[in-house]
Amino acid sequence: MPFSPQVHIEALEDPDANAASLLAGLLQPQARICPKHLYDAQGCALYGAICTLDEYYPTRTEAAIFARHRRDIAARLPRNCQWVDLGCGDGAKAFDWLEHVAATRYVGVDIAEDWLRDTLERGAKRFPDVEFVGIVTDFTRPLSLSHVRDSAHDYTPVLFYPGSSIGNFEPDEALALLKAMRQHLGRDGRLLIGVDAPKAVATLEAAYDDALGVTAAFNRNALRAVNRTLGASFEPATFAHRAVFDPERSRIEMHLVALHAQTVRLGVAQRRFEAGETIVTEHSYKYTPERFAELLSQAGFGQIDRFTDERGWFNVFLAAP
Ligand code: AVI
Image 1 (cartoon, rainbow, N blue to C red):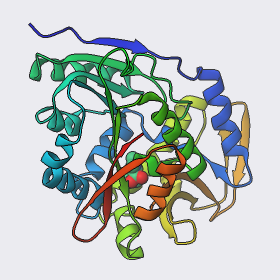
Image 2: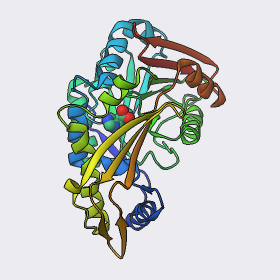
Image 3: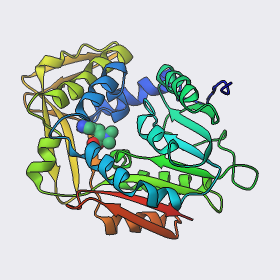
Image 4: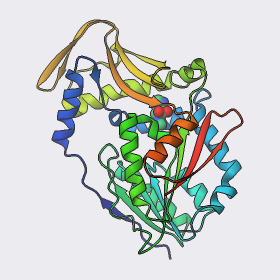
């Protein structure tokens, strides 16, 4: 008889504050939409499609690194661990690990409650000896995982943060998040994290501007999310998708570019966009292995092991306090 999954709701940002910060971003001289608005139900589905595209190498490169080094990595993980799946989505990546590690508890963490419940139900059926717990929380806020038991009292946590999602934070925010993760690990916990690396500009830009236009649709979909949240009047078809790599900052920048001059209603406010003016929707930082190892040690990690592919396109770090 499997455990019945439990779901805990951590304090989420209140809707008024969320709308206020979205509006403030859109009214800045360089308009911005926080990337979390890319991930409504439609956006999550489009992101799932992006991960299968020929041009989007991170997902399959990381999967190949995991497959190749799974035994070696699993042997370095604590026994009876609790597997904390940060931004778990459908849980597929983590479930591949649960086949190989001695996990007693799975903690799925995601902002999308419906999706999380579904993931837990499926996991509980597939792994009847593992306890399934979910935490609904928003990563853009300080990481609080009060339902993760600490190693002194219970199972040792393995924090699993694949997919180079860390790259979507500004470097100072990424450091703060890594520090918060470090604090949850106790003495024996581990962080297993996937991080994309810099490479030829053409390869990077194609990954974020694919021939089928899936990433363009994903980007424009943010405008529909803004329309819902603010009662705004964006017409997504009047904005073009642009993805450029900034080598100095080592990041892909995703923009929406106004195709013609227009005034957009933003609920109680409005804003004029001139033709060619852009809205920044996402940054995706690419870290050299040295730079990311430095960030990990600044966050308080002492032992850092790295696994990569033959081209060095993507790195997986196993970090211990
Ligand atoms: C979720 N995140 C790691 C993706 C990335 O590569 O930065 C989001 C994405 N944006 C466009 N394509 C994929």
